[in-house]
Amino acid sequence: MRLPGAQITHHIRNRVRIRIPEKKGDRSYFNALSKTLDSELKGMKADVSPVTGSLVVWGLSLDLDRLFALAESKGLFARAVCPTSESSAEPSCRISALASRTVSLINTGLKKITKNQLDMSSTAFVLLVIHACREILKGNLTAPSWFTALWFATNIYNNNMKGAGADLDTAAPDDGGADG
Image (cartoon, rainbow, N blue to C red; front, side, top):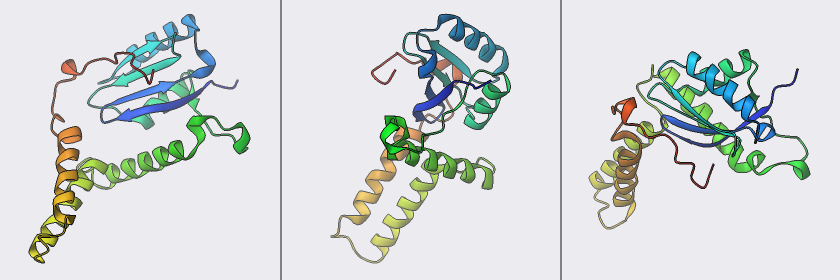
């Protein structure tokens, strides 16, 4: 039996939106999906939307590999594989999806190597701060390099790391915005 293909359409720290186009509008499928995920996901919460054919999972312990392994073992969905023919490629199978999957793999590897001490965001933050310090120590104060590096590092910190210890209860479910 072939499982429906699931595409990651949006992923940020502790939250992922997964679209299952084949099941769009199938209320019984999404009701069963919701019941299964609610009983199986520990430390994560899931909202389903049959209207958009999507699923939002969030939580401090979000683990995409575990989520997809669970979904496949329960016969719910499988990670979509992009077609080899470029003419039949959907938008999610283009370069942005490839880049997203690659970054996700690197992020997973970093977490594994550092025993969840570093991820892509924290590594980029550290590297940008080191670069800025190096430029300042070299006396390169007129070039924008150090300032730009600190600006990017501050944005990474504010967007991804500032609220990392927040309670799961304070995490808001998806509002069904434009990407859903």
